[in-house]
Length: 341
Image (cartoon, rainbow, N blue to C red; front, side, top):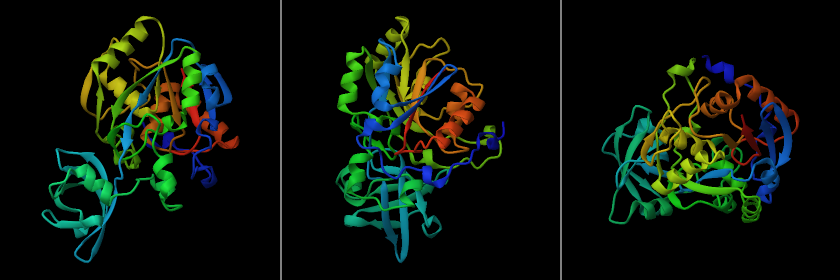
């Protein structure tokens, strides 16, 4: 498959720079079978069925953008994936000025040693000192907004609140699982009254989620790996949901990718802990999920390929044209879609 099959034109003014307020007032495009309907996130309960189980990602975004120096050279680092107790793979700006063994001085007196480069172009950074690296990163870093927002305005204190979901607990993500940004305690209460339950899992979203697909053919793209965990209780609850004839609705592509990574061909979900680099494209046979709530994705991206696998490429291109023509807001701080094949 050619990557350009997943291209579309998006006007620049459709990119949301702030979330809706309140968050559950965001619009929601519902694709339910052959039907296309315009709703609001606050009406989600009316779009689902009693017995459905929503699956949220409880990862918490860390301040993964670091600015520093190696000698006179300015160095920017975006942490990508943890590797051991004190080391992180990072995508580094001005990386040609850094050699293995160099010391990089970040803000707050935080220093790191440069290690080898990975196949994806990332650089291994090992933080020095006796303090836990989590504390050092909090001291030196700032919230890692997606490039399509950060290039248009400065990151500010409001983003520290806006770019975390209400489920955020397990520190380790460098990007938010943005579909869950729409949820509020009031919405969760309305869902529970309607008989819709929820569970959580953990997938630490890496900076690779923002990397463009540079290959011309989908099969030539190498998917980035991310660490995730589904504990035995959650796996058992999801298997019981399907055994009872009810649906599993992933909230966000991160939840979907981890569930599908943990499921066997029969749809049974096993406890999972480790890396996943699952790459879902049209032709993939979904094993365990029955629907997906997600934001609107970039053209030519792996995530637009994923939703095309779930609903069909032509269906998704038509849905995105409708969303653009109807004024929906796109990307991390934008509106939502509910996809029920």
